[in-house]
Length: 443
Image 1: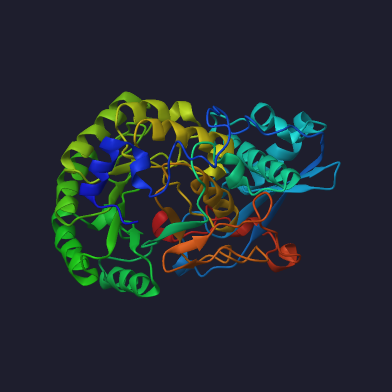
Image 2: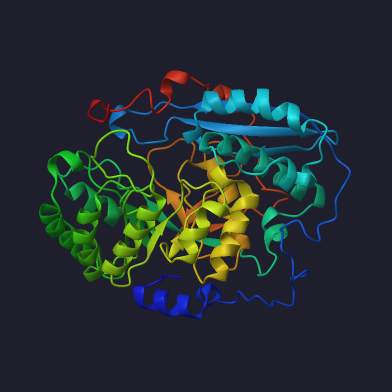
């Protein structure tokens, strides 16, 4: 469903469940309505972890199609004494070599012989973000095993207070490599292409070289041109990537409200550091929250979203309770499924939708779509449309978006299988890592 500013503000006043037709806290077909953990009411089976391994994959990409996070992906596999193998997808932002080494030398000895049904004890999140990503792969793989043992899709197990969905609405997420100085109309062409493809919305980023060559005054007429080109029936989402200062954000967001933007993402630095300021700035979360509250006020009802860099519910807590975010955006490749579920439920209690960050491709998508299908405050899910062979390339039966919707895999566990020749098709090359191979203007 399309969420306008007016319907968003009305829905959040009534509670996040009002966003979803047919999604009720009192659904008679869902048992264990008072479950405070996704594992409550799920019978524990006798199964043990016998092996843990990480497989790394990479693909070629033209330098002109470079963007953060492309080129490599990470697969965590957990083997059991029943021959069941669970798969998980840690975020590539953790660093493929680090995640592999940390998982196989630090995590593996701790969980061998343990029961994957104890996932919340043996595979919690971690406040260190890179380590959290490694643990997220373990957590997701445990849930895949639990679903396979129970012969149920993960989303059915996680749906503790809502009828699960079987189709999830997606928006196109790209707008990454356009250059304002060369031909800004590339972004307009891209947006029109997604509209023709059947997407209801597009999220885009600032142009390349934005910090060096752009001013808000120069930018605003182009945004007006973009809105006119796509029409009022196509939603626009602006991802700021924390790339502007608070004064710039306060100048820009009122105009986005006039142009009826769907939401604004990560407007300013969430650690309270000044963009372009002196090196060695200390984190100031209180200042960051205050900045977001200022932006939220200036946005005149356009929702503010964020949270993809957070690892657990406790990081989200103040931001949710103080209304610094209207939309929360955890990512299961960073939080794991368990913690992602808790974040979504916390947001639900405060009347806020959960719209996960979902950028890296197959191994991120497979867990996030299960989470969104299961929670009462689902709204929509990101679909990365950037050049990426890992969108559909790793699965025997890939997830596919058609006219903004994708079917949730219905098989046991995550419901997906890795192609047999993945290592041959996508041999890992550490030199293809996105940090080691990027345009010169970013170095």
